Image (cartoon, rainbow, N blue to C red):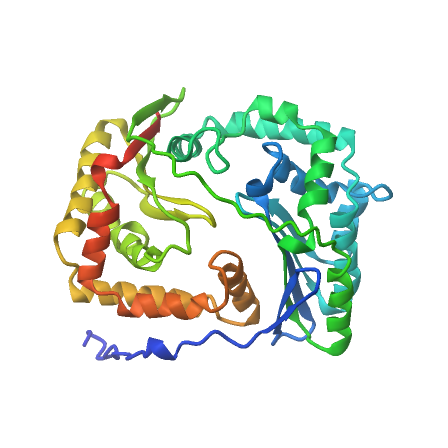
Length: 425
C-alpha cells in the first residue's frame, strides 16, 4: 500500500479463454482465399491483397521489389500523378511493398468509396505501365537510397550478417547493389507481374461492412486474377556456414553496430513457439535479461535486443546492439555470459510467468478491435500457415516449462557456431 492509501489490486487472468474473434473465410476456384471481418466502426473499411511471392519466386534479383514499387506509377492511361491525386482525393491510405516472402497491397478508406478504390487498385495491379522513364527514375532513387543506407551501421551489419548466414547469392542472403539495380529491365518487371500477381498466390483480407453486395463485388474482383497452377514448392538448401567474425568500417561513424547469431528455422518449425518465448526472455522486451544487464546495469548501450528472424522458408537468430568501440568487447562477453546462463540455469517461475503474461497481453492487444484483428489474422494465415496456429501459439506459450526452455537454449543457442558481424567505427 502506497502513501496515498491506495492498494494495487492483483488481477487474475485466465489466458486460456483468449479466443480469436469471428471471421469469415471463402475459397475460390482460381485458388485465391478471402478473409472477412465485420467492422464495428460504421463508414470505415480496410482491404489488403497479399501475394505469396516476394524474393522467393524471382526470376531475376530485385525484380519483386521493383515490380511492386512501380505499381503506383500508373497504367497505360493513368500517370503517377493521377494515381496519387485519386488516392488523395478520396482520402485513402495506400501502401505497396514487397519483402522476402510476400507482396502486400494495403488500403484503408471510407466505406462509401470502397468499391471504386478497390477497382482502381486492382487495375494498377493487373495493368501496370512499367514505363521506361519511371523505371529509370526509380533506379536513380534506389541507388541514392542505397548510398545513404551504406553509411548506417545498423543497416550494414544486418545485411552483411544475413549474407553470411544464408549465403551471398541465396534468396534471403543476397544484397542490393548498383549492378543489380542497373541490370533490371522493363521486361523483368512485366515477367514478374504476369507470373506472380496471380490467384495461385493470393490472399485477400477485408474488414468493413459485410453484406451480399460487397461480397459479390469482392468475388468479381478476385476472379479477375488468373490461375496459373503455379504453386511452387520452394526448398532451401541446408548450406553449412561456419562461424565467422567480420568487421565493416564506415567513415565518420562513432559507434559500432553488432549482429551476432546463427541460422535457425522457419516459423512452422515445431520448436518455433518455444524459441519465441526463450528469445523474449533473453532479449525481446524491455525487461529482458540483455536489456537489464547490458543497458540498465552496465550502461554499455541504449538499444540491445534478441531477434528470432523466422521467415516462411528459413530463418535466423541474432542479437543486435549499438555499442561504443571501447566497450564492444566487454559487451560481447556479457552477451555470451547471458546465453550461457540461460543454457545452464532454469528460468525462475516468476520471470517465466511475467513473460507469459507479457506475450499473452500482446496477443490480446493485437485483437483490440476488428481492424487490428484483421492484421493479426493476416499474419497467422500468411506467416504461420493458418488461423488455427493461434491456438498452437497460445497453448505453447502457456504450457512451456523452464526445463523445456533450458533444453532449447542448449540445443540451438550454440555460441561456438555463432557468427559475429560488426559495422561502424
